[in-house]
Image 1: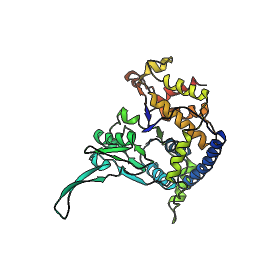
Image 2: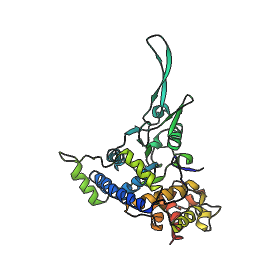
Image 3: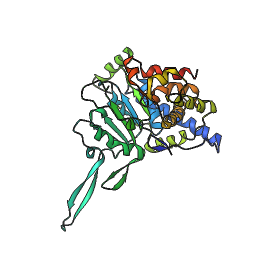
Image 4: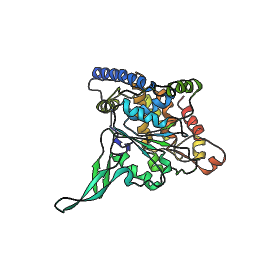
Length: 342
């Protein structure tokens, strides 16, 4: 069975008690409104970034935050850890970082009686929210050390598996690959991220408010608005939300249409080297449900599919050499795919 972001995709949309589901969804929507308010006291502007990050966590997945340094990616992750009541840790990825620095290692200890034994020392990945800062500055070997943890929620050291806490999420930050000292992430690891969230410069009003709030004698601190157990319950509820046939058809048409061998769009077959797999459709299915709940709605719409198409697809597709030479952008290809849905 294909999995999305390390969690198995449940089948069906059975509704044993629609009234109870509606009540739970409304209560979750109210709770999430408080979460967004708590984040807004610390993070200024970037509403779309905050929304997509919350969608990632509510869907049970991992997020890739892409942007130049200094845009508040670290502050956002730290704020989310506090507001959602998660045990959060941060790892600064550098070229000399080793896999054991992330997942942990075994050390040989000698007891008072002279007996020697190995003891496992957990690494920083043993937390509920891991910030992998500047993940593409580490070597490919170290980048791949996160793969098992992200996919299986456990790590294996010396043949022994060690389960990670629940919930477990990775929010990785990535500098643009054009910057010096960066290594592109392999396709297999990119596919493990539910959304690729692009962070741009704030607008003038948001930057003004940030300056006034962060350079004075007092600075606002985030406050908890949710717990880890409540987040797990929210993730389970979102998987039970109904999805209409129209939305399901839109997801399938969008994802299958992005594959060069299957697409009827000339721009796809001409410009793409490869397209998204079934995990992209699963990601869209979960993310549209989460976006609906965030907006206080009980079921996703085709508009949710359109809004989330780019962050779900752009890291799961690749332009061919000819398209790159012609200056074609992935955003243009995705726009053509979205136009099919109206």
